[in-house]
Amino acid sequence: MRSMKKIIPFLMVIFIFSVLAISVQPVLAGDASTTSFKDGLEKTNIEAKLDTTGTVESKIGKIAGIIFGFVSIVFLIMIVYGGIIWMTASGTEANVKKARATLVHAAIGLFVTMISYQVASYVITKIAETTS
Image 1 (cartoon, rainbow, N blue to C red):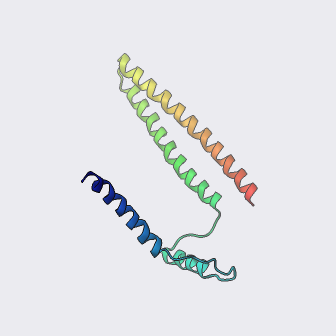
Image 2: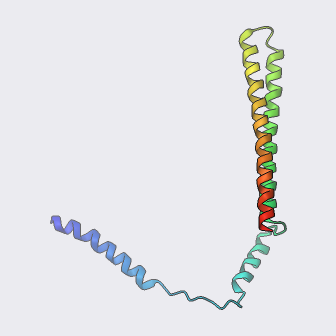
Image 3: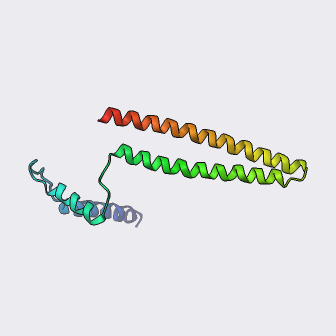
């Protein structure tokens, strides 16, 4: 009985592999002059209404610019929030420390964001120069 428990999963695996092996059809390389694959991609692109203008580098640059713009807005909001906390602290030392920490962290974050934007811009420019 114990040997049957070992044999049944083994037979199931062999059965599955044999069914897969029988059902696999060979794929032959097509002629280089056929454009059916390219035509299919173009039709899909038109149906999906995708923008095909521009290079990959320019699209990555646009996406990075949008992301860095949003992050910069977040840090600007943090700076305003820290300023409001400081103004409404009424001399309370704990609130002033909290506001100061918020302002320092927001300024550091804004600085890091601007530096990373410059680095990303430089890298994307260099990639575009080497690929063109």
